[in-house]
Image (cartoon, rainbow, N blue to C red; front, side, top):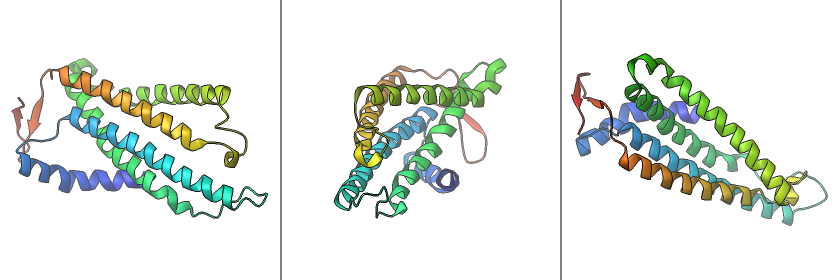
Length: 190
């Protein structure tokens, strides 16, 4: 959450204005969501690599205990990446839903994200259940498992999801997209 809050501020004050100065265009909501997707599966890749390292350390120093001599700071990179991802993804979703929903449904824009997160939690629970039933990757003692393989499955799922997203976004036509300039006035986006 700290990473998301920090990067939201940095993006709004520095990255997005700089991007607009360099390219003459703002990032569209669909582009922001797409960047969030890419960062999500990159985060899972980093998580898999960190877990592989943790597992190697655990196996090499296995002295009959569950304590692994590795710093918790190894979790920082993936937590920062997921925070950056959320700083792109969620505001992009709110902007997209708010501008594309009919006027009578605009207040549903923020609620829509909660629905999507809820569905994602159910799907994640189902995935973990399938992994536990079909593999030995998630035993009671994580040092005897292969959590890194679960992360790699999530990377593959994320890449496939991103491919589907790009296909849908490519063919999507904005209903009434308006772009804000620096003075707060709006202009039609082409």
